[in-house]
Length: 139
Length: 139
DNA sequence: GTACGTGCAAATATTTTGCAGCAGT
DNA sequence: ACTGCTGCAAAATATTTGCACGTAC
Image: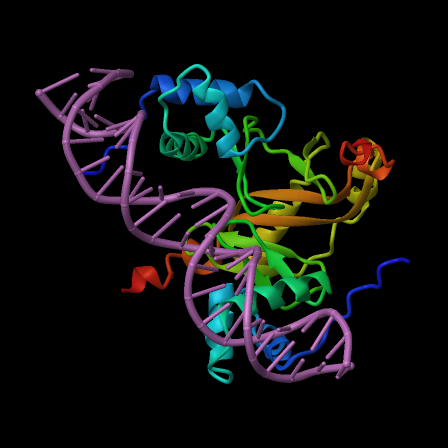
């Protein structure tokens, strides 16, 4: 007998976590999400947040961004898109430019394997930091 | 008075760590490097390995790859190049294809900031795993 | 000689997990 | 009712750091 595919239940916790993540354009940490969810569900645990973020990622409802810092950031937009990381203030911004999809096929041929998708991150200084307008400098 | 730029000493430890990393085409973890260095310098500490990897990265002698897993991998090749991550066996492979450098300028214009460099990672199945030749399946 | 670097060990930071009871389907 | 899911707390994982001594320059 083949193993049945895992059935995911839409629990209250899972729904609120997804709603919180969908409601922001930022790319928050697990802990920030935890604090947000706690405002409507004070007894939720951080472990539950992490477990749900993993499930939501597996279901391809969200993305996990694990570069640019020592911890993961989460992105409520599951559609493939690029990101920019500011080396000065650490902000992670969405880049709304067309994907460079033709590279996937080239890489697959080069390797003799299969390419499912790719990610691209740009590093530099965001507009505020570049112009000396950063929040830190206004203190 | 302006602060003098930090002077980095080339200690025995730093040199061996760099040599170990330069000698492999793999992308090892800090712990793997630690074990390698211990073979010639048994009393080195893991903290020293981490400190030196950070300095070498700042000096742009090596790269830190902090995506695709919960820990960092280190790359002795400091030249910009793309990587492929196998979702099945976890291997990280270099991709020898030209960089898509023209995007940096586009992103800078879009943001009104400055772009220093970008990274690109492809995800999929490597040749061995794709053809069912993976080491795991041979057990 | 100076101050950066090291070994050691403890601390930190982030994420995962065992378990007993709860709840979605 | 059947399993997946939760809260809690402890554990696991990866990396950083304080300190006294060592060493490259």
